[in-house]
Amino acid sequence: MENQISATVLEVGTIGLLEPMKMAISNGMHNVIFDIDIRSLVNALYSTIVPLNEFGDLMIQWKNILLSNHDFVVSFVRRQVNKDAHSIVKAALSHLRPFVFHDVPTTMYSLSINEMQ
Image (cartoon, rainbow, N blue to C red; front, side, top):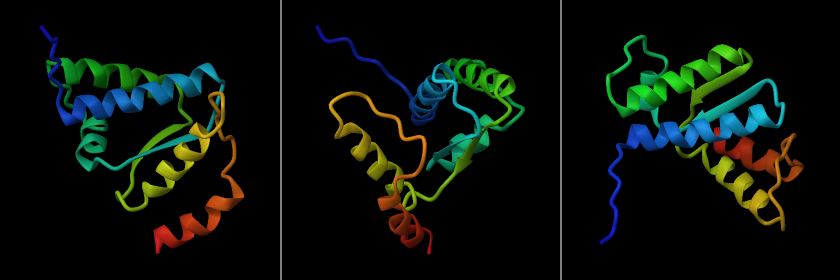
């Protein structure tokens, strides 16, 4: 018998946001901007209303991280602009070991400018 886990898009998106935040904290990173392409998630996370469900529990974790790390910002970006992030992830995954870019690779500048126009 296979175990099935049911989660909403907002729950999965929040988990997908919490993990990089935890990684940034464990690596001592500061002034980090987390861009996500789910507008309803950004709106929900910055809302003062916290639902009494699994998503609400995840929101509380997220809010506690932001309260402890005032230089972390979560913002909405159009899905097209998020292609840059996917390119960076692909470049990071091409290394034999886990790799974190601390600066934007110079090869990404033209791609970023083209995507934002």
